[in-house]
Length: 97
Image (cartoon, rainbow, N blue to C red; front, top):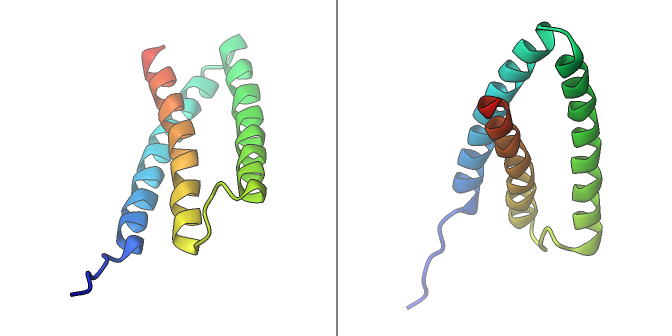
């Protein structure tokens, strides 16, 4: 008897929703920090831009090396996981400070 696999896009959709919620929280925290001004605000702004460039370049390297997988679903899931790790790290750092 053949086993029917679950639709991977349902989990991917949940992961995308979770990333959006987490990113919204980080955007809010960063906005508050930057609005305060000062040296920390400048450092956070520079960090934000450099992190985005680095995350995009590392994702591009993963895509070129085949590390994202061979199917659209695996590439999407691994892309979301890549960005969720970055967003979670920022959330931890911003709530700790």
